[in-house]
Amino acid sequence: MLRSAGVSAKQARLFLRRGRANPLWHGHPWVYSGAIERTEGTYEPGDLVEVCDIEGRLIGRGLANARSQIIVRMLTRREEPLDVDHPGDTSEQALSRLLARRLTEAALLRQRLHLPSPETDAYRLCNSEGDGLPGLIVDVYNGVAAVQFTTLGMKRREGAIYDALLALPPPYRPRAIIEVSAGGFARLEGFGSATRLVHGEATMPISCREAGVQLEVDPLRGQKTGMFLDQRDNRVAVGRLASGGRVLDVYSYAGGFALQALRHGAIAATCVDSSSRALERARRHAQLNALCGLEVVEADAFRFLESVTPRSFDVVIVDPPKFARAHKDLPAALKGYRRLNALALTAVAPGGLLATCSCSQLIGCEDLERVVAGAALDAARSVTLVQVGSQGPDHPVPAAFPEGRYLKFLLLGVR
Ligand code: SAH
Image (cartoon, rainbow, N blue to C red; front, side, top):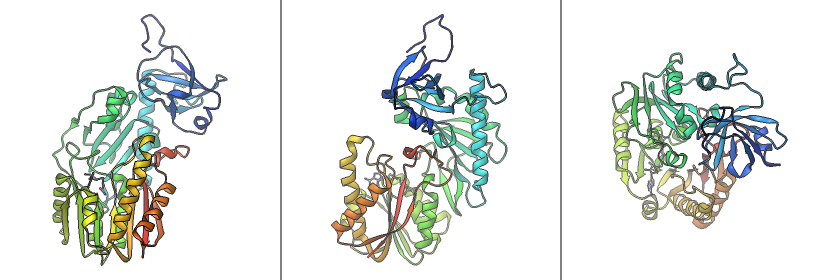
């Protein structure tokens, strides 16, 4: 839908099919291409557009990309102006001011959450839809911002976003900014993205802290933006319960759960991951924090669990990567989770705990509970649900956007 020369730059208007507007009125931030009845005007990928119901009532404005299944990501609701000081202004400058305002609000929320703190200076400053900035992730590691664009609309405004970050007050103004490539998202949305230093100076790895544990994070070479910040509170919760126990941390990455467990007095912790680089970091982290008792095993999680001595760990954590990317993957994914959890349950000593996670957006908490019940049957163990969790509070989600609550965390008592 390229705009031809001479046509005015007036915003295109997308009208939704009857019955498709309701979730958006309630604050769901995504418009699927199948929900569009008709389009008035033309737009280029990443342009700001108006979204209306079939009656022509303005639901709000968002950034559009016809290449994506999610054709619009909403930025404003109803008549809410882009720029409060110039209510009628729908220009690119007004949009820049909106982005800056939203980042300021994101920083204020983190301030309320006591982030950063002396114990934790690795946190998420901006969680995409949850901070009213769909397509923008900002993770901060000791003052260095790792920025990831997952939509073309946001990538197109990267200059304004970097400026807005640098205009934040301390401690939120970053001393350096790194863009972290968004790989698959970039291909899907049709933009180039590379991992690169955008502003300032930062020596890698970055020393930072999570709940009192000293870490080294390298956004230029790590997974995601460098670490999996969403599990912080779950790592602490499990760590506290692991004192005196033997811990098995499967899909450990750089040792997140194991380190908290050792710090809270676990006798020993075994990290299992297929990435030797992640395990090297885990070992380094144990050293940095003078924690003894860490063992690392480079292995496929399933293969490892198949050969582990039954009932030999007091606390087992399984935190696998996404098993389901699309609806068609669901049956295989559910089977995979069931098998994984059955194997993990076998490793738990009677009276111990299993912390099991899923980061597949398509698998709900109740799905995971059912999976675990099936796994308990397979492993001939009985389990009770001790605690249910999700991603930490610096990963907020709009209330009308269950898709945003992708991380499921169940803590189970095992007999
Ligand atoms: N628990 C970690 C995050 C885990 S992310 C934390 O708290 O930080 C998922 C991890 O699974 C990654 O480190 C990845 O290297 C690892 N992984 C992916 N496939 C694997 C497999 N087949 N076997 C073992 N580990 C795997």
